[in-house]
Length: 79
Image (cartoon, rainbow, N blue to C red):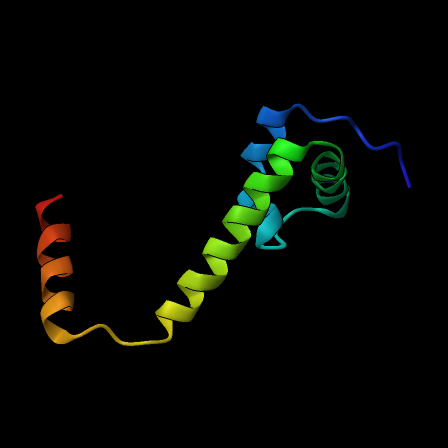
């Protein structure tokens, strides 16, 4: 395996969502993972995002009440 490049916090966070989605190439994933193992702040951010993603996925399996769906659609149409 080639040497793992040391990422800055900014670089690691730029790739965090792809990392959580398992969408990075193996080398890039290893670099992000190494950074998360050595940086407490980025690790905490990654854990927060991971848990948020899991909760949103769980919520996504439930249907919102019709009135709420309508309100969200109306808000989205404004943009």
